[in-house]
Image (tube, rainbow, N blue to C red):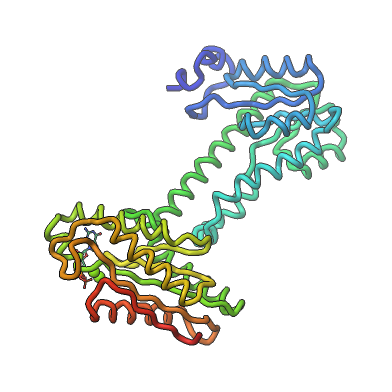
Length: 357
Ligand code: GH3
Ligand code: MG
Ligand code: MG
C-alpha cells in the first residue's frame, strides 16, 4: 500500500526514515525562499522524502498560490523581499483558521467534545520557518506570527526531515479528528433516513431560537406536519416505499423552507417540523401552503387515502412572541393542537394557532 501511496518516490523514501503515515495522496510542500540554491536543496531533500514540491520566491507569491496549491505544509524563509516570512505567516494563519472554523460550527458537539480548544491548536496547515535568524526575538516573532515550528540555517537535514515528517503526521491526525467529529455531528444531529435534522437537533435549535427571539422581541413560528393515512400507505405499497416517500417529503420541505435560519427536522415517524425564526403567522401559513402544494405536486399515488388519490399532508402552524417567562414547549403544544385539529377536520389542510401576537 505504501508504495502506491508514494508512487515513484517509494524507493527513495525507504532509504530515508521509515514511512509511518498513511495517506492516499502525496503530501505537497510549498517552499518559499528567495535564495534559489536553498530552494533547490530543499526541493531535492523533500522530493527524496517522497513529497511533491511547489516553489515560490517571496511571501506574496506564497499567499497568491496558497489556495490553489492547497499545501500540506509550508516551508517559509523569514527574510525575503516584497513580503517577509513573518508577515506571510500571519496572513497564512488567518486564511487557514477561516477554513477550519466552518467545520466545527455545531454548538452541541463543539461544547461536548471541547473541540474548539483543539481547533485553536491545530486549525491550520503547519508552517515551518527556516531562517538564519536565531536570536530569541526572531524565534518569538515566528511563533507569534503563527509558525508551527522553527529551524535555523545552516539546515541540519536530518532534523528538518524529522520535523517535516512529524508536522505532516500531526496535520493528518488533525484531519482525521475533524472527519470523526464531522461524522459524530451527523450521527448526533441528522436523521439517517431523510438527511434532515433529527429530534435532538430540533429541540436544541428551538430552545436557542426561543431565547434569542425573546431577547429581540421577534416572532417565532413552527409548522408540524404529518402524512395522511401513512399506515395505510405502508400497508399498501410496503415499508421500503414508505421510506422513499418520507425522503421525498423531506426534500420538499428542505426546498421550500428557504430562509437561512429555517430548520427542517424529522419530528417523529412520519411527522416533520419546520422552525421559522423571525416569521409572522402570515409568512408561516404561506410556507405551509407551499409545502402542502409541493407534496401534492409529487403526485405520489395513495389509493388507500380517504382524502385524495395522491399523498397529502395535514399541517399545524403556530406563531408566538417568545418570552423568558414561557418555554418553547408552549409553541410545540400549540402547533400539535393545530395539527390535531387539521386531522380531525378532515386532513389535507392547514390550521393556524396564534398565541400572544
Ligand atoms: P393519520 O392520517 O391520522 O396521520 O394516519 P396515519 O396512518 O398516517 O398515522 P398513524 O400514526 O396511525 O401511522 C403512522 C405510520 O407511519 C405507522 C408507521 O409504520 C409509519 N412510519 C413511521 N416511521 C416510519 C418509517 O421510518 N418508515 C416507514 N416506511 N414508515 C414509518
Ligand atoms: Mg400520519
Ligand atoms: Mg403520526
